[in-house]
Image 1: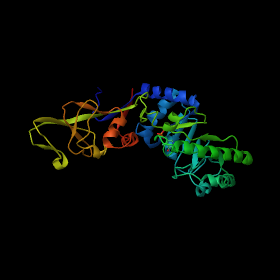
Image 2 (image 1 turned 90 degrees about the vertical axis):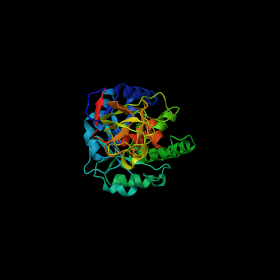
Image 3 (image 1 turned 180 degrees about the horizontal axis):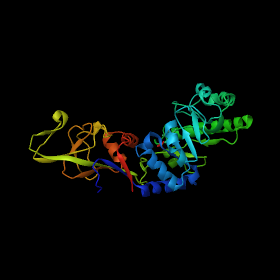
Image 4 (image 1 turned 45 degrees about the vertical axis):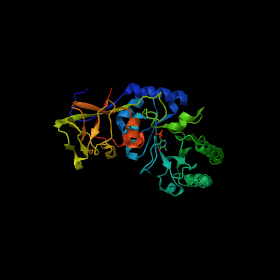
Length: 338
Ligand SMILES: *Cc1c(COP(=O)(O)O)cnc(C)c1O
């Protein structure tokens, strides 16, 4: 137990490195791992995860914004920004082209990677627009380094994953020919996220963009170790008499005399309110009453409780995915690396 005054997060470095060991066996090289750090590194803390990634020897990172790229610039040799167009070109940061029409908006000499829509129908140029994209990229004076795509259902055991792989295979072939024609060889190709990398029998791309698996929360995999644990601190304790109620709306009614305590973690901090009155912590403490903005009640008088040490378990209770549980955690919660 730590003697902190507020709810806090513990990041377990051994677990993170354990996951990275497993990942590098699949990619066959540390250099092919691009750690996905979007959304405050899936709630783990951008700088904390960047620092540990560097210590392990990871050289590539994927972020959402230019600002995040700037914050982690010193930790990596390669950074890919997924969702923003920069004001000026960078030597280290690569930017994603998400549509044909955006190409003219990138500053000249920007390092760019072209996202191709291989079936997700969210972002990216169509495979039929490849030549047009290469033309416009050249005309805009951008430096094309890579072509990539994203899977819509790598984590579902259907044939869709194979279908998208086939689509991307065709894209790769055409892009390689275009790269030769436009003299932009060699291009970097990548499509794998966590689930896709873990489904591949033999990974052979230039890079894998791994998020959830590095944090140890890929569904269906028990060799991984979750990196993040969240603890809350007690604010006060009281005895409840039979039939007394707890919290907003009095939604929990004591069926017998009980001890209830209030802890400093609420929906404003990232405790999904839909878990009210049904969440059970890993050590068995039951949450009761409506979860408030800054706090929540549990049937215990412990000074501190572990809220979760595996986001997948909490996700199941909330009928959501670990990604949402993790990215809901506010950045001001203290994070400690052990
Ligand atoms: C979020 C994201 C990833 C990582 O996905 P995981 O399932 O967490 O591995 C990879 N690529 C892109 C384009 C993403 O947006």
